Length: 415
Image (cartoon, rainbow, N blue to C red; front, side):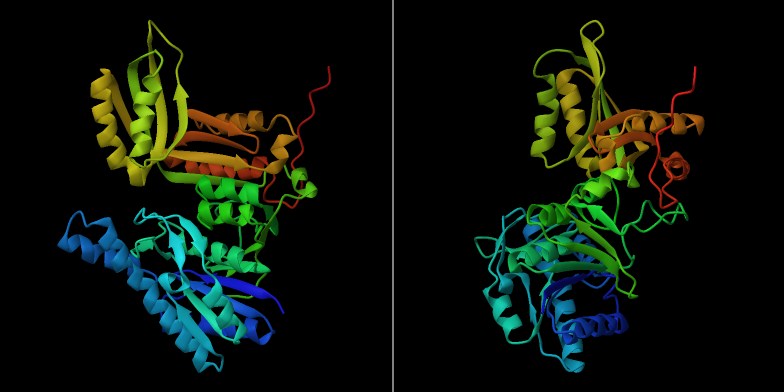
């Protein structure tokens, strides 16, 4: 008997029929002799509906009250799923975040999990019940309801799996695994059978939408075996595990893109100590995440400093940067028609020439690179938003990701 945690997203529980389908899957797992804890999101569209209601009443609703209203979405789903499981002959009990005691900090709408009291869950599972837990929710030290922000239900599932020391955490969604790239723009994309935490974390942080990077970080930190699979079929999914030696034979594992990025450039900034801090410290304090950063070489004591932010942060970032630019007597430039394109793979650590191929293939396709960032296992570039689809297809072919083969570096021409 294993302890298995399953998570179902909003699409998977979007209506009564889909909730019944989830109940059947859960009951089947329990019937195999496993203990099952299920984490669910709000029904698809519900969070947006509640957010819209709040903004009709107040254009700037207090974050604390937003968390109170958003908690109701998952409350409906856990009760309905527990009812559906009971209707199929298995005992079930629903838990809200504060009943489990998922303790968080007080950063409303983007709270971080501090610890989880598993006693109630363990007791429920030991009684033979299927524990149905609201994802996305927590409670702070003062008893206030909190929410975990984007990807919160994934994070809840992995955190619960880690706390319960579950054998497996299944993220059940509307796709049947992690692919080499987005199949919607590259039909040759292939499902990956096994992938490392490191590669998945890079993919999640660089635009892949299958998992949120916080959940992958939790899985890596606590060594949770993580599986991504479909809610709508029984096909094997993708298993996310610690790095294996054989994984380095595949140089490029996947290609990701992020069209929800914007570029901000400070021009004519004095090239002197402390200037970068005057820009990035206030931005960081405002909770805006900065990604790629480039500083040009100094000319006559002045320089340009360019970076990217998520489009969801663009209004806050621009408002803040305009004030900073005025204080620095600099000019501000902004571009929202850009996108970030990345190749990722453990094998990049031990194989040369990958970045050269990346740049060469894009150049041959007439795609200009505006910014570049690299790490041991990824190369990222900023390109024009309308060229992303073509760039993904070009690189997918160049690195043989449409075939189950290892990318081979080209040999230098004979003299």
